[in-house]
Image 1 (cartoon, one colour):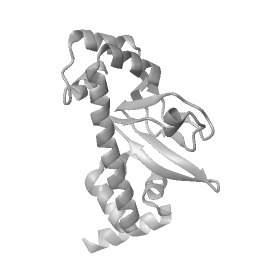
Image 2 (cartoon, one colour):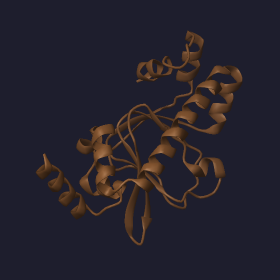
Image 3 (spheres, rainbow, N blue to C red):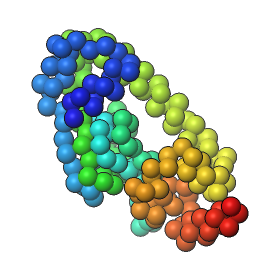
Image 4 (cartoon, rainbow, N blue to C red):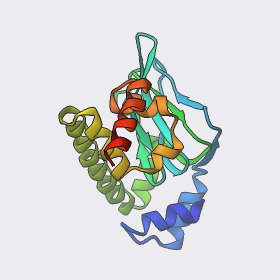
Length: 191
């Protein structure tokens, strides 16, 4: 798993052996089973996640119904808002699949940043990319029809169609599972 992480980091910065060893010494790597809830609404946490293998989902429970807001798959990171705000979480994070990821907290990051400043540069670049991606996703959710959101998902994240249960996909694009079934049928008929 370490090499997967190092290969990803190499796209942004070059690591020395000392820097690689420092990362490994932090004991960041964790495995979680499908269905594991990493964070619950109302819970405090200081953990941020970077997915090496698997899929995470963030969701809210509104009137007893789960409302999926995002999926995080390989080479995507997630720092829950509660880590920054130091307030209880407003949402849940759960593993959609068996997952392997790095789990870090601000204290670990600060230690690494002090010793190896280039990691702070890496985190800034990744944060900027995530912010831009999140803004685009929000804009598309607000401006696209459900069909356009589904087709966008098919085009840009086709892996999710095989990895994620239909009811979670439907929630993610803002419709019911029954509406998603009808939508898929309509699209198939058009072809």
